[in-house]
Image (cartoon, one colour):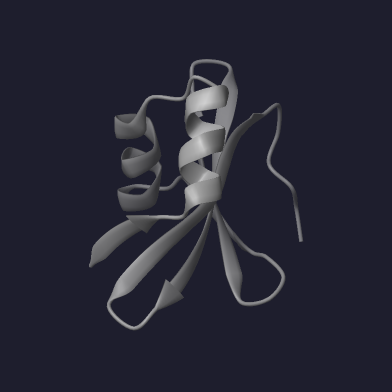
Length: 77
């Protein structure tokens, strides 16, 4: 699947100083996965003591990255 970054995701990843390779790693190998609103998915992977959360939307053969940020713990649904 092709991974596409929204303009918002690109801006936030740079602002938050998140390595692009870490975002891609979360998409390919998430530790946790929850449903978000509006058919979005929240993918999580732990890096040392904190989780990287990546919000995506699947559309045909693409994964669209909506945003990414660091969180202290995983949200339970």
